[in-house]
Image 1 (tube, rainbow, N blue to C red):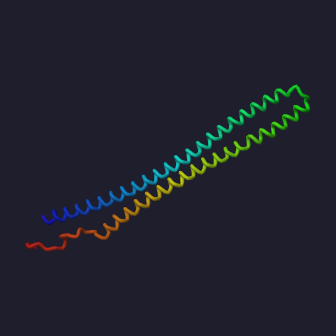
Image 2 (image 1 turned 30 degrees about the vertical axis):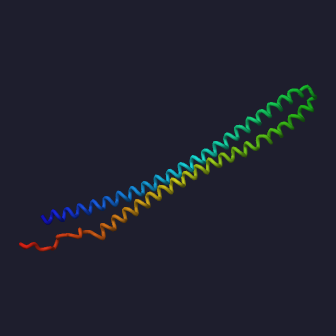
Image 3 (image 1 turned 90 degrees about the horizontal axis):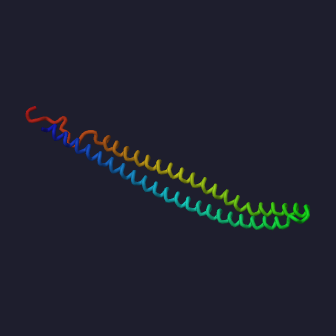
Length: 166
């Protein structure tokens, strides 16, 4: 009967330790989930900003295309002019087209940079979440190990006690 009481105490201590470990795991998982939610929200904001830049670039590109179409129509009207004049107009148009294309090249570079930063940001945050989770899990495991090491025997251990008969 005495060994049954000792077994009950051991079972109770084991249940307490399991409960503490479960709480620690749950806290670590909750923290990790919160961090992942933050990362997702930040990623959504970055994507929305990138999409806004893309839409602005497309709208500006449509304007440039319309402007280019108008300029091409002018060029076609002036084709009856002398070949020298035509060559001169073409050179002028090439320079103008480069001026019109430059902002889009800049926007494209910004969009690529934003996409790269977004991927880097997500990678860094994923690593931080993983590190945080692993650290919390290690801490919880060490805490349970410390409790187990500090109390290797149940506090009400009957070992070493004499019975009335013995």
